[in-house]
Structures are given as structure tokens and as C-alpha cells.
Amino acid sequence: MSDKVIISCAVTGSVHTPTMSPHLPLTPEQIAAQAIEAAEAGAAILHLHARDPADGRPTPDPAVFDQFVPRIRAATDAVINITTGGSTRMTLEERLAYPLQAAPEMCSLNMGSMNFSIHPAARKYQQWLHDWERPYIEGMEDMIFRNTFRDIRHILQVLGRERGTRFEFECYDVGHLYTLRHFVDEGLIEGPIFLQCIFGILGGLGTDPENLVSMRTTADRLFGRDGYRFSVLGAGRHQMPLLTMGAVMGGHVRVGLEDSLYLGRGQLARSCAEQVRKIRRILDELSLEIATPAEARAMLALKGAGAVNF
Image (cartoon, rainbow, N blue to C red):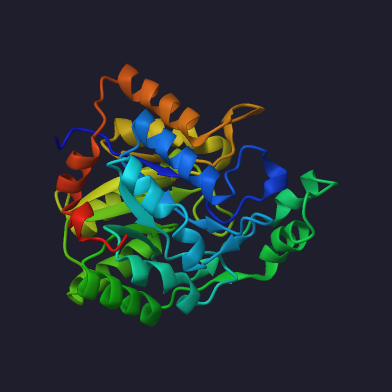
């Protein structure tokens, strides 16, 4: 089982907007359908954000999450991973509103405050489907994603200690690994650590292969080779090449329309499941087996689907 690869799928996120792809899931029905299809294609973990059904903008509203999360759970055995990142425009209280209610098996947790932007992408579009999109994308140039040490401590306490939720620790830079080590030393994080190494976001590490090697070797020093499991997220066109490299290095992989809207050069992915099937074909060619949801739960020591509130 330790040699099997966990495929995570990030279904919609909060960065891309409706103008960028007609295939980006926005309504609860679309998010549920794409998540279920991705699980059927081989994703063991489903990473979920919510969107306002009226215009597709990111929302932290628990009532919207409740329209698709229980449906996904009823239709699949996949691990449901709820964001605590939300978007750069949400307060910590808003970002935690649904996770605290749902007490999921897993949540994402960004390991630090940072510049986080795709504002240059606004230059590609002359017409927008909704009035909110252009200022949302251009405004990222002057936005900071906030997760202070106190914020992280709070999340680890109220979700981890009090609700038994474990985390996908999202690390955009080498310094985030040291922040993670700090909280291990503080006794707030116990292994196995699920480390998500993220490359290609403006404000974080670039997509040079050397950066992946650096993150892996630094994690080895800080946590020991047996003290963590690492996964790779490559943004945009770097998705599949970096994931392939990560898998060769013994890592797990994350795909989904949150991370990349494309399946190949100039080819929009029609669904998250298309990306799951593509990385699964690559893993098959590398003679690597994928983990089932049950195996992922065992590998990450999750509390189980019966211990959630949805």
C-alpha cells in the first residue's frame, strides 16, 4: 500500500472565473457531478470549494456547501477535503464556517501568508461573462492571502484537536516547510503528515524541477523520509509534467480544474475526470498503482467517513 499513489482532485477552487472555461463547475449540481465523476475515474480525495450559483463567484456560505457535499458523500467513498483557504477576499471566520460545521476527515491548510495572484491572466480576455470577474482577477495584484502563525494555530486547534480533522498542508515555498516543522515541535501536528507541494503560483515557488527536488530534500531533513507523505500540485500548463516527476520520486498527485483548466496544449479539459484519467494513464505507464479511498484513509490515518457531520 505504501507504494500506491493517492490521486487528489481539486474540483473548482476560487481562482479561475467562468469566462476562463465553460467547463468550470459553478453550481452545486455541476460541482457534485464533476466530483462524483472524478471519484469514479480514480480520485481518492476530493478537494472542494463552493461557488455562488447565480454568478460563479467564490462563496464561504455553508448553505451552498450543503447543497453538494452530502450528495458527493452519498454517491462515492472518496475522502472529502474541504478548503480552509477559501479565497483571498474571505475572513478567517468565513473560511472556517463550513469546516467547523462539517468536521470533515480532511481540510486544506495553507502554511503561511503570501502574495497569491494570477492578475496577468486578465490581459487575455476582452469580454467577461460577469461584472465581478475582471476586478476580481486584476485586484489580486494588491491582495494577500492571510494565514498568520496565530491563524494556523487556531485552525489546528478548532479543527484538528477538537474535531479530529487532518490536513492537506499546502506549502508554496520552502519557508512553509519550516513553519510546518514549528507546529510539529509545538505538539499541534502529529504524523503522518500529508504535504502538498505547490508550484507555479505567482508569489510562490516556480515550476523548475530543481524546486521540487529542493522541497523533497528539505522535507526529508525536517520530518524524516518516513514521517510524511508528499504530493505535488503543478499550476496551469505545468500540471502533468510536474506530477509525473513527483510520482517518479515516490509522491502523490493532485489534478483538477482548480489547478489547471487544460488537458493539453490549447485543449481545455471538459471535466476534472478527464485530468484524473490522464494522470492515471501516466501512472499506469510508470507501473504505479493508485490508492483506493480506503487505502488513502489508512495511509493518512483519517478518522473515517462515519465521523463527519454531513
